[in-house]
Image 1 (spheres, rainbow, N blue to C red):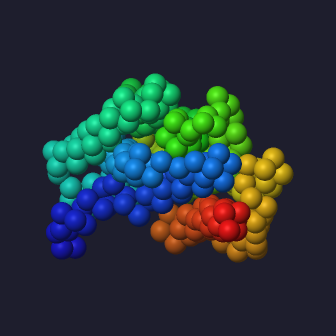
Image 2 (image 1 turned 90 degrees about the vertical axis):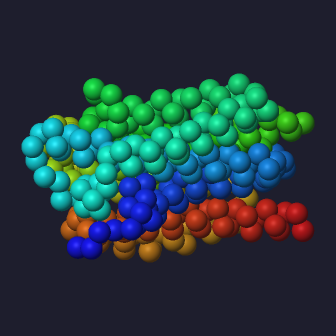
Length: 306
């Protein structure tokens, strides 16, 4: 294999293609805010979006970095680790990860002074979970809590940040925005958790070798598949609940038309879970559910405005 370019190494290290996992909950939070609270701060929302994406990329890079070091320490060879596969130097990886964290932190601090302490609280919690996810002596990703941690951090916290930054100066500011945000964010929480669950289903045997006792290790592949399917079902149910509570427009229910496509995609993965050939169906399932939910919510907003 030819030596990859810096651009290829960067995209591989931070898994640039996965930014959609953070971008979609953020857009969902913005769409909910505009529909329910009729308020939107475009400048602050754009700045925070950059911070969210930078932090997401930094966490991805950190995961790859720590995984590589664990494999090296154990004397094993990983077939999936990006750092080895793309011949990335550890010093360059640290530089990229540190730069992304710094940029995210600078934007976060600026917005905290402008918008108030709730953004700092949510941001710090996300930073702590992001580090604890793959760092420290007992990283979360090595435990059965990896799935809910990723789902809550990216699915809920990011949605919550998007809501707060758009309503902090609104006359309709709602102290219970966190609870309404949770209901709206539940589909994102569930499908993002499924990305980690699907990943752990594929990597179960390799994970055991390096001491990663994930949820799949404890409940087995068969039960993990049932949890995976249940999360997709619940995500659609929560879309209906959000519409019934008038948190999202009725038109958002049209996202249910994706059910047959998602079913077929997940069926392929369940029949043959494999990182290289079928795992992408999990990512497609996430995008189909969240993109359709956001798209039809935006259309509902346009119709409301007209």
